[in-house]
Amino acid sequence: MHHRPSPLLRAAVAVTGLTFAVGLYPLTQLWSSGWSWGDASHSHYPLMVDAVYFVLGVFLVVASRDPLRHRSLLWFAVWSSAAHAAMMALQAATDSAEHSHWVGDIPALLIVSVLLAVLLRREEQAVREAAA
Image (cartoon, rainbow, N blue to C red; front, side, top):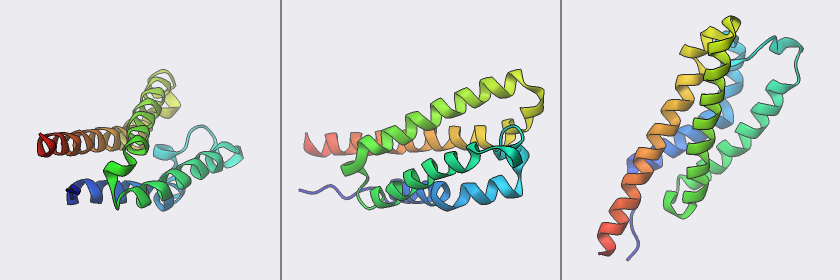
């Protein structure tokens, strides 16, 4: 019997993917102090980061159709987002010019990692219980 994925998990993965794919660049332009680091106007890094998140976002949108089939990608999104947020938190804590990130990209990535982890763990548990 095929397990039908939770609509909440599917939606969370799809929204995260869409945000990563098409939402980050506008955020860096509209609110650069909360979403870009250093002097982004003279740096090559923002487009490189945007490219990585665009690709991850596209794959998350694809994964949203059948999240458990793509659980390793989802766990990558969880742990890479948590690690990225932790590194940004350390940098924001030690650089007063970057304190605005405490209300920008740091909590956003923490929310993504916690939300996806909780929903994915619930889904995995539901599958185990259904199989028992």
